[in-house]
Length: 400
Image (cartoon, rainbow, N blue to C red; front, side):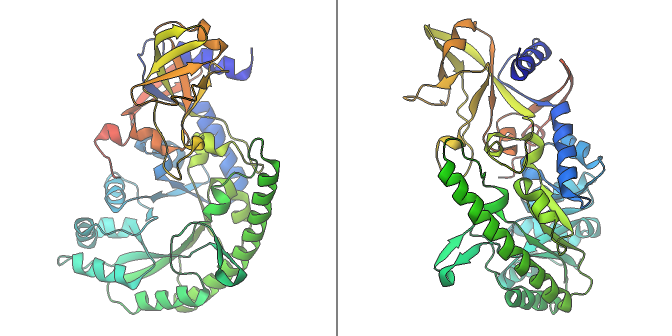
């Protein structure tokens, strides 16, 4: 029996009393992935990206482990909710225009002390000030550095279009603008190198493309390491008490941690290890989060149909954004239908061994987005469900 077949047997036994659709997290795999992230971080604390987890119980579990400290959130409303729930170090990774939430933040000393907001434009400060509604608490600010690699005099850009702040001078000038403004304090810098951390460099069946990605990422890491250090020096000249410099992501943990200028690493997807994180030469994780769909039809030889399953992930549309049938091994989509809104036909010889009501296990393309489809996660240890915990959705929280 292969390791995957053994996992399928465990998951089927553990959930035999539960009807699909359902979602699970294998805690042994989850904890092993957490340990691997800590190992790769080389002693620097890991700030957990909540968008990749979207479950308070699992955020609490990982933050209780040595090597993890703080949350990187994705909306201001989520940040305030987490802070009220007892998480005392929440970095909002994206700028917000949530005026009501800014009013809450500026009016509550506990929230203002726990939450740091992202800024890359003084217009965002104007919006916050206009939203205060009389609140006088100092707002903690993190400045975001654009990490994109620019070639040929800027005519070629590699990397996500995020912050407009690219040079040390631009970041330092924004830091000065914040420092001059009453009611704000610069406490950190963030720089997320998504073209390194979030792009696999070992694309199956594409050796030339994989080599090109590795060459690009090597050049990007070298350029960013120099520029990030210069940015930190420039900002510290304005804000000597800078608390943190955050960088990295699951795919670049060990590379980013090697930079002296970086004080903490961001990671989250490496806990669940969705399918987009299979194609890396720098690490190998264990799939920890899966979902099961029930077999509801047997249309013919070598075909079964499962209920639902069309859960595409965000990003540029393509086959890599679809879930993949994972267990039993050997199932594939019908190319004419792919994953469907309410039913999904699956082809392959394992279909002939599946009965009505049996479970087919899938892996989602991106980590936390799975939790937008399910209101609970069944936590598995060995071959038993030891707890069932709500996702954000299960707690009535759909922030985006």
